[in-house]
Image 1: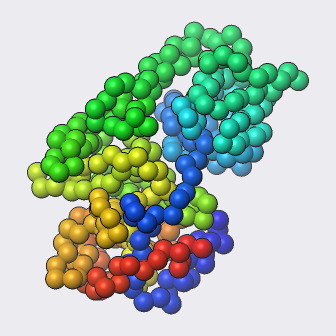
Image 2: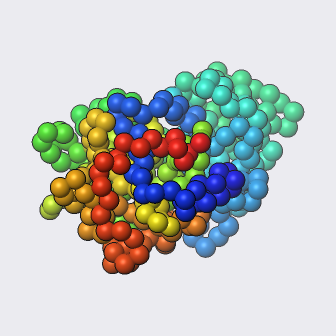
Length: 346
């Protein structure tokens, strides 16, 4: 990972100023959706947070891969969502490893503590204290749960239960309750019903792909959102901005590591949400006479190239519009839009 980031940053200083498209609706390369990711973390404020084997803190919306070990500590619980509708939850003081994780099967090794499993479409096996179990029922605990753990699981199951929702595609049904909690739906022609986050849940100056960080997934740059609604709204769908409405999200069925347009201005890397549409689906607010006015746009986020890949949220490094005016060219010709992302991502 570090080698790829270093290669990318060095390359910035030798390139002209292309705008690089991560993907579009019709032309994106197929990228398989991850099998498992961290969907929810419950932790007492100020106490030790759950961590991985290498002592990195468990973060919201991070992919879980084969071989990963999670330690919840005495104060944390973790929920992992599985592709196909399953879920795994770890109680306090639980250490669990994904000994195997494929598109069809997961083998869990539990060294201590208690887990809850909801199978979904994956076959799941559990090894614990020399016992190996293949789960035949839809829901299962490793040991008899304490009342608080069972109550938490029931609440999480209620939160994730798919409901008839006219606003979401069927595949995204389990995100409906989360979206309703953090925002509301409105009808906007010609897109139909779109979702808008409540301002009280957003940081000052928030825009899509601004609260979180970048990482790598299958040689593609992937957005890790720190927003509790971030997995659904930053890996599916498109973001638009409207006067009097602010940012709103249009659902689609296709999963992607991120749906953004890339730009490089001198020593800075920038990105903007892709517009809803076909090949030229870049975000065109403040687009005048074949030129982009970056320093006036509500959509673009720029950070110093040497900060790309940091674990801190990118809004800690974001260059303000006034700084961008002084430090980078104000306008870039739109004739460079169709440059391929693969030039810098491989």
